[in-house]
Image 1 (cartoon, one colour):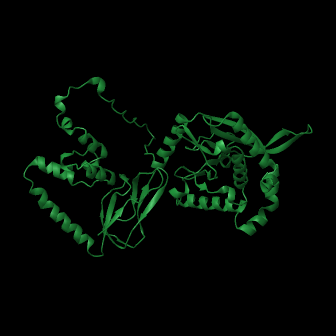
Image 2: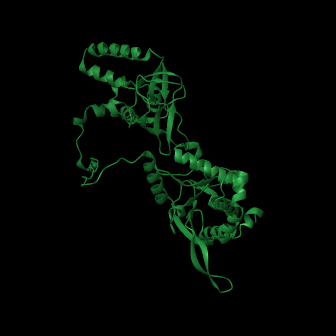
Length: 414
């Protein structure tokens, strides 16, 4: 019998929700064939079969939450798994009937419930008799909270009548779901959407967030792109977009203003001497931010190739957790949806995020006093004022503006 367990989910991710099983009990499966989809706070990933055989048992159902290392199901050898499953069921039945007392039966059934790795470790470390612990989890499973309560004095739990009820100590009941009106429907938020909501709210609550704006004349960058885009695509096999211009310009500005590429850790500031630029990508499931690593070492073609690979992965739902961890600065382009102006929210623990917007013809007063229609883009830098001063933020955007308006600066690194 081979166990199917929850794999390591990535940095800072400890649990997932079983989205759906791709196979059912009794199905014959091949090694490395996708068996079940897990949805984490960041991505949806597939768990593949560690070996071929028959899916003999599904332990965790769709919709349940599981931790890293938890048992999802079992794989048996072809032709024997169902027989083993039936035999196990027969063995379980008489055991349940031979219990001498209802109380002991209840305790035994609780102790027989599968434990998550975290609960099992806590039980083993503290030598807890699980038969003495009442499970409050799904199907009576024991949770970490149950074990902690047992260790802190489970006897009090066994005799609640002896404890006087204090109305002021009673926790408020959760608000009942709103009654739906005609033509309304209720759909549970995905874990990814819940994570996005939590992280964005955390950024607002934690950071002293401000946004500063500037505008960029995109004329020179557009002319350069139009002049060389065909040759560029023919040679490198990838289209020349404007994101590579902004990644290059952002790296130059980050080198000049390192606080924008840093992180706050307690009372310390961590300055990062590398440039892993997150590029926000919108998917049907929500916003994800894959990271172009060591962007300062990449050419325009290298940056565009990375972005194209991530776009394909996002479209196919194949973005991995390793693709989205460790960024030092983020760029988001609301202009692709027609946005003219926005205030992007920080992506913690980063302290800066650049917002690009739609390029639009606007009348501009030129240095000689003439008025011309120019392709202009508003840009926004949201930053954490706890570590970045207004002078640095404004200067960062000016440095970026200069590089985009005179793209030869990017080639010469000046």
